[in-house]
Length: 230
Image 1 (spheres, rainbow, N blue to C red):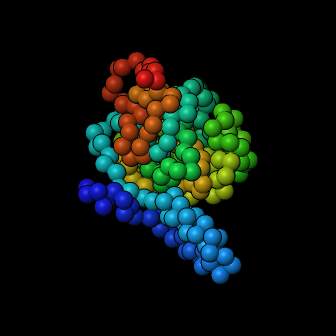
Image 2: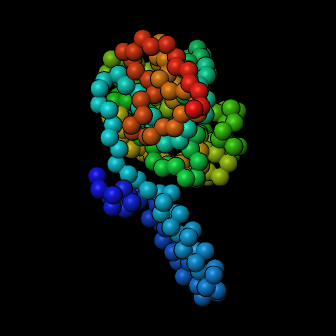
Image 3: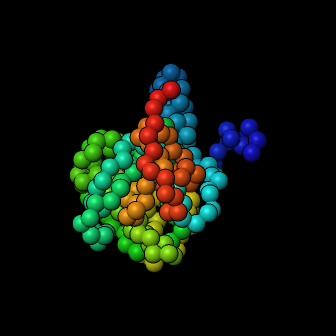
């Protein structure tokens, strides 16, 4: 990939309307005052930056769980999957990836598999970095079953400034790891519930890249990792 390609990243189609609105408002602001117009230019460029949708190089080996979101691993803990997915009441390892307003917000499927349940639930718009956001906030929950019977879930959670969750998946869809499936506007979180026996290969505070960073490996026997700031 050339340096120019890294700068001129395509914009997700969901962003065209917003970039257009920002551009129109900017033209109006220029009529009011030049300084306000330049503020509008900056905001329009930020809007285009927010909706950027770069290609990613996804590891294709079977059994890998790939991060569905850009951001930082906010927390790793045991939690019960959303009840609307029908995955039982046993706690699973949950990896939470928090996205700020400067991250790429296009979400990607974590594994190859069939979508067996999709459920939307209204809720609050608390800070997505809070633990209680998993239960209280608006969310879009997805359950996936792999060809070898592994059962995982991934949940898009609205945040403090997020006001729209977009998910293009429906029950029965066959998806591939790294495949785009939706996004969240503007700043949010994605939780991944691993199947029993899976240990995460990431640690809290680690940065993730959607479609590239390996969160877990079905075939790995490695114990949960530890890390430190250096």
